[in-house]
Image 1 (tube, chains in turn orange, green):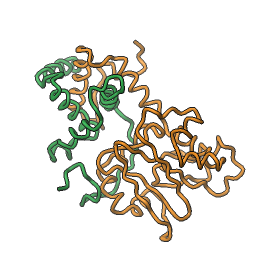
Image 2 (cartoon, helix red, strand yellow; image 1 turned 180 degrees about the vertical axis):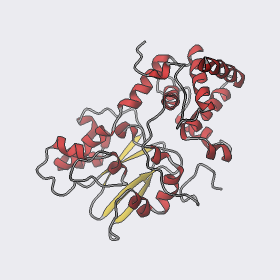
Image 3 (cartoon, rainbow over the protein chains, first blue to last red; image 1 turned 30 degrees about the horizontal axis):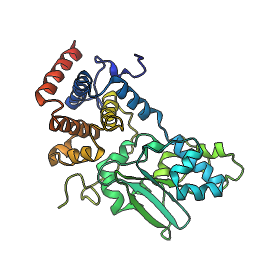
Image 4 (cartoon, rainbow over the protein chains, first blue to last red; image 1 turned 90 degrees about the vertical axis):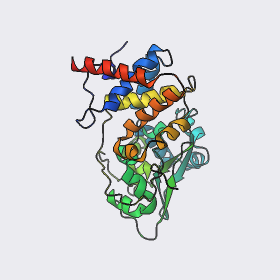
Length: 212
Length: 103
């Protein structure tokens, strides 16, 4: 077995922000028992971790950049996201339903999951900690403009804000507005401007590449 | 009745901690256990069941546990409910792992 992931090392310290968690040990106990009993295999677990860590916002950004440069693709992306993703080689068939919503000068969308943490991880990778936090989940539906402001984006009052509450069966991807002054950029360069947060809707992409 | 997991508009929420968090090994493991158990070729659990188990945690426990700790508590509950493992087996195995960790 390869040692790509050191979670297999039982001697590795178990920490969460520096504190050992009794639940972490119970997760390892569950892993051991479930594999001993043949309910799961170590290959299952390794493969699940591989999938988790290999998904990144780059896949979502590819879709956004293509939609920015190709209006016909954008129409297809909004109409049938999974079929459009398949055009770019992304197979999303085994995932929950996906809806893509477009931000414009008039409407700004922001995504939350008030009940748990539903998130388009098939396109953005694992959700950031703040997305799963109780504060984000509580406040986004009550004061979306305030939350978005906290992330650094002041939306003009005339812009309508729509909050999308994800469910286990439906995930949302925000198609952010293309930044002004990017007409000269290639699709690949545009893709590098598309941030994870802009596809959740808490910020807008900037005209220059920034490191999130 | 609003239950503890139903956070939309929940009073008392404060500033959002936007610090990025690298998942610890045990958090990756917790996620992987869930995805593996729920995968189409295993179907030992469904994600709806996981949610039900998380949402059934006592309120104080829900509030005090971190995100993936809730997942682990929920998976444990589901595995016991389905009679795949017993709590005693988990306790015993966890104690063994604890000794290995101290070694």
